[in-house]
Length: 437
Ligand code: DOR
Image (tube, rainbow, N blue to C red; front, side, top):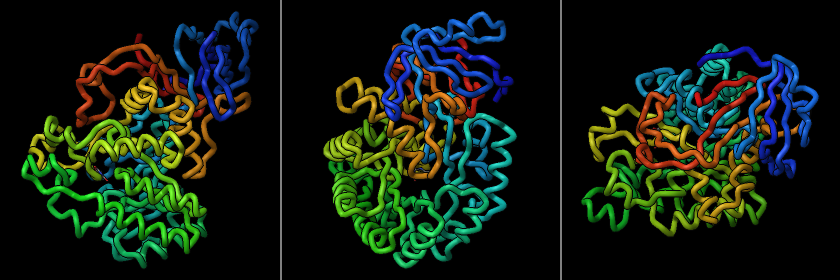
């Protein structure tokens, strides 16, 4: 990723700046000096525009948003660099407007030691760009039998614990992990899947799986785990975060638990919010994800939950896989969809359809995930380092023709016409992505 030196002076002139966290939605000038936001006001730039080192970006219909925060991505390094590596993963994140990204531990070897955490952090620091926050494994090797040394992992820099890709099936281990996570003030992120019910399954169990004649994984495989886990979360007081919620049952259970005061949050992905299991019939392996795409009523429940905050976060579950792997077909391809570079325009479809308020979407991509992992949320405020996403809400483009930064292309949205495009990303005061105009 090219790393230009921080411009001394960067000026966004007459731009629509939107940050619901500080009740900002106005056309203003935003001035950034040596990486820090120093002025936000109409005409704030008039005194600085004469400086010859100023980079000036005219608003002209563009939006300036806080840099986004990804709570769930797979960067594949070490072990699966043919799918993605830390450099291309962070470059894809920057191109998606992300200033922060959390990486899941299902690498090879698994990220289950302090040394593995430190290696990832070193690599990311040497690259610059979006800040990388490693998520450490809950159980050694994701094997589900022995807890990792959560304290040592936290001390090394892990922001959360998860066996994502696998479920922490043992209630006893989950209980101990939640107690430890509570002590360490870090969340436990669960991939809720009762593996005894999903062996050999490739999609949601329903009319479409029956028509295609393939084994489906039923909603109960998610709901049963979520119901049990919420009881354990309630009794331990540890913070439980549900990864990629996919069922109407999960939504109902989370809503109930929140009413009871349980410390719980949840995320939903753009694909679970936009697609149904019918997509598997048309896109085959490209629509194979874990948990699977569900039915219309699940999608409706997830959308309503995102709108009312029951599901507080939007996460991509960026899961890059090589084209040859997806070409093996529905039955043999690995599950997963890439998503970092497409998330914002895809989610804007819901805003444009009137199914989601823009402020809620921005919150779900900035403040809500930051709160779960305990970092200061990017914000458009005077005095903070600039973490910003410059977005053109009008530009129409197609990911397939755009030259994505990710190594992978595994998404059924590849040839869609997308409306809205990230034009620039600034992380920690530095421009880490800029679209050539
Ligand atoms: O579809 C998925 N792919 N879901 C997961 O939980 C894991 C991920 C992967 O690592 O490919």
